[in-house]
Image (tube, rainbow, N blue to C red; front, side):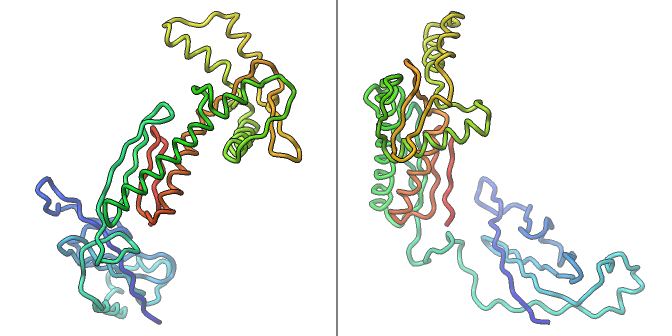
Length: 295
């Protein structure tokens, strides 16, 4: 049977002095490394795993052993001595080097950079790894600029946003052309509204506005005001043109609120910008909406 070498790298948990702790575990099997070997069966082929503790990591080797029956582990110890010995592990073809991010050259080490930016009623945070600070600053600045542009489209706090201007036209019966971003999010909102039977509803604006005022004043809204606001809420009244990128709100005084989806979309778009700037290792946090890039 052919042999294959699999290498699994696991960082050691360190103490406050930066020294490795005694608790070391393999990614492939929850065993401690002081054990010389650990046997486990995935199917009818038994495999052996050996972990070698190094300065900054553990290299684990796994290779096929002899063919065994699925019940081989249940055999008594008197039969174990008659079985063939497992093959010796292959030797390392290289000298271990310090751990680096995947797909990155060791000649250009990466450094960590953290940035914050208030927007959309929350604080956006970007953590990224880049080869130099200039590249990191440029990528973060571009990502935050993209978030700012989305806020100008999607905010229901700004009266001059595209979303607010659309809400101001509610009930006029006219189709309003919308941007690609607003068209995409409104359609996604309608899909979620249908799937949730209205639990998620982008037309919740009248109720959102009423409760914001109630929180500011520290008192519950009047019952009649609640009923009036509720009468202006309903995702079926958000209508899409069949052939053109245009929408309209069928009832007067309707109001859109994309707060349940806008920040997540902004996080997605910020990560796209980071990718375009060559950043492959990053995390974007939009007030709890998190997205981590895969190297």
